[in-house]
Length: 249
Ligand code: COA
Image (cartoon, rainbow, N blue to C red; front, side, top):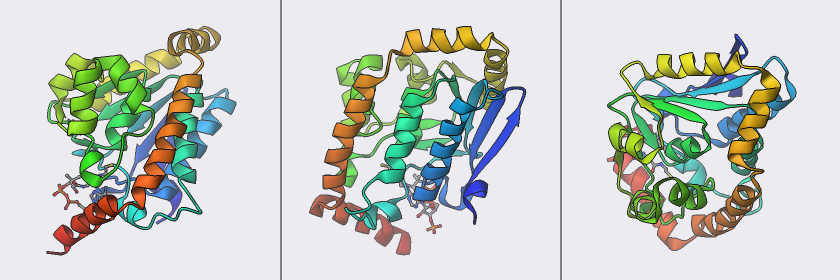
């Protein structure tokens, strides 16, 4: 399958829609998908026709998180290049990012939402980051952004204890702005309205509200250094093997 079909892109009414499209793995993000998402976000900054970006997943699965096969095959030499390119592209994005979630949002499927300006989800959605159970640590700037959004203890319960948030709980913590059966339609309506705003004012307003991103960029790098070490740890290797053993049974 080509990169472009794993991440579908469509530009209409000033909105670049990026849809993760790997249903057979519940939208587990592999390196090619991170690369394609990064390229699309980088391109959005340079393209005047793009006024705002909409991120979507599949029916019942927004994303099952990073591809565990990629984790298991992690090569210290190649490092986390595609993932880091994507995370920095998120921080460097100059246009509003809106998400519509239905169903599972695991790992990066949850932490990507900390980078969104507006996120909507269906009532059946759930948000979970099993980093610790995989012998890993929080990523994507979440160790900084989650406590800022929801306070230390709720962030700790999500990121370290690994407790899932329901859609209603995610709404209450501020991870979402809206919950509804038609979450994609809600997200699309909001992003189209954003795309119709005066673009210069929109860019400046967003920058004022998000800051320059320096602290988030630095935290992403700190997390990535720890994450790369953890990926080759005995704890993590055992957790990845257990995941695939469970699948094989
Ligand atoms: N990486 C690689 N493959 C994954 C995956 C992931 N993160 N998540 C799901 N898959 C694969 C499964 O191995 C399975 O593949 P198979 O059909 O070839 O066996 C397929 O996607 C469907 O998943 P399945 O587990 O059968 O669906 P489910 O509805 O029972 O459970 C999840 C869905 C997401 C709860 C479960 O797959 C899971 O826990 N995945 C791992 C999530 C995770 O830890 N992500 C990393 C976060 S840092």
